Amino acid sequence: MVLPSALKRTPLHSTHRRMGAKMVVFGGWDMPVQYSGILQEHHAVRRAVGLFDVSHMGEIEILGPEAVAAVEFLTTNAASRLRIGQVQYSGLLYDHGGFVDDVLVHRVAENHFFVCVNAANQEKDFEHMRAANRWNATVEFASERYAQLAVQGPRALDTLQKLTVVDLAAIRYYHFADGEVAGVAARIARTGYTGEDGFELYIAPEAAALVWDRVLDAGQEFGIKPCGLGARNTLRLEAKMALYGHEIDASTTPFEAGLEWIVKMDKGEFLGRAALERQLRTGPRRKLVGFEMRGRGIAREGYQVLVDGVPRGWVTSGGPSPTLNKNIGLCYLPPELATTGRSIQVVIRGQAVDAETAPTPFYKRL
Image (cartoon, rainbow, N blue to C red; front, side, top):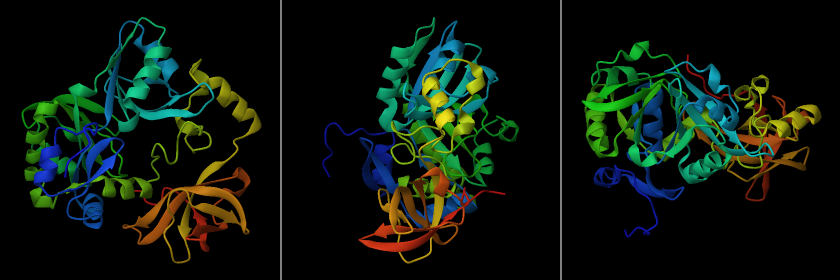
């Protein structure tokens, strides 16, 4: 297969092809969608451990004497409250309150922040942050300096602990430590996008293949599987984790997407604050809600949602849940209709198929 010259590749691209991964184009990147199969990979993460190449994700660093003030203004959450070694889920917003992106903010030092951003948005995010930066702080595009691997599942800690002297059990959820994995310098963050316990490793691109192979070796006794974007999507949907371009985009506010908890209105000025204040007064126009299919059929992105036979919303994400053995999805509805237990219909190939709004997350680990 000849790839378009503009298509991007992670440092593990040749490894994926050597291992027989099925490749797809995602956000301008040639990425593995599956290896052994989405179901097998999904179950490996829920029951044991899986390994993902997420090196397509972007990294931006903000540092300098006024880095705290810069990050406070650029993001919705309260970065000033982060302790060194702590991670925060947050949002980058436009002035009108819609999402530029959702991000993970890591506090590396008093005046040094490390931000993980979505793959397709990284250049846009950097320009947005650079243009809005009016403080004595530097915004650096750092994606070329990092590869990223995700080790996810109940045996992730046991797998990774074989390769590092860092006490992984001491790293709390949404915290990180800098150390070594397989003899390679690594930022080890207890974060992920699957709804399971696990770690995300930030390493030098030239070390990615070595660490990938060592993690697979270390996880063999637990049944580790290399995993692609297919399982990553089914796992995050079960956990109701937002995907940019689906649940959130430039037209969506955090209050509409059920992400009000990442907005700290009491912290002072930040991009998008005025628009969010207006929405607090008027109320959101729509709300994100989960649903389960009652009739036969799989809901997909963009499918129309009916309430009492009238078009009232649309599906943002949908598909089978391998863990629950149900067909599930997320959709936007007017706030007064976005309540649990409501009968709805999803239009699938021209037919209205019964469904019912349901509590989320669909899956939550014990």
